[in-house]
Length: 320
Image (cartoon, rainbow, N blue to C red; front, side, top):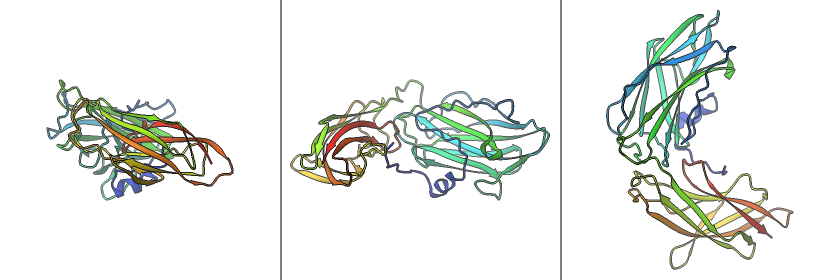
């Protein structure tokens, strides 16, 4: 993972993350939704949602879920939410609308916002705040209804949306969680593919001799890009050789233009970039600082784009 992780979430959601035992679904992954063990007094069940796909800007779908306390004592539980898409583009606020309503439970409020290309959220008693708990009586159940919609802004390059929901008690020792998958867009769309990232070029550089890399991004999502994509290049936080500062330059066809040090933004992939189209960048990598007793070593260089966790890693050999 790079030292850089741009957060797309709202300030409210980001601030609450540290206090939450969130069901963190990473973009492009599925939640296995492991059910509780026999020692766990909590279980969770869910009804099916209405059949058919979610259409961006179309009708919402809903389903009920029930949390049951099988123990002989009341349990204080937190309500957790998450969301993840399958596909190349990260999700941002405004792409998905989600609400939680009490069916047979205390009046409920929910918050749901984007972070790191997916969504994170919580539901809690009305008038409370993130971290407020429901008191679920012994041998009792609470039921809620989740309503979810893909807005017109949803990036149609992604083909699936998974909503995670669950209950956490006893400081995370007892968890009951499930996930509900939704197909996004008409079934005849061939969306859901990747943006293929490739990095080629030299493998070694010195304080006096930079190296040049060819970086390319190819749209293989199946459709033109629904929104801009923001690529970047940077040094991996797990680089074996630390204490080295890299700087980057971009060739604009006539001269090298400085991109800066540390992590640097590459040219934006434009919205409506055609499926199958490729953007090529020529990047020069320089050693801008050496604060290490080692005279040489390996550095990990990452190229990725915001919201995408599968960064392309290139190992470089650096010498003072």
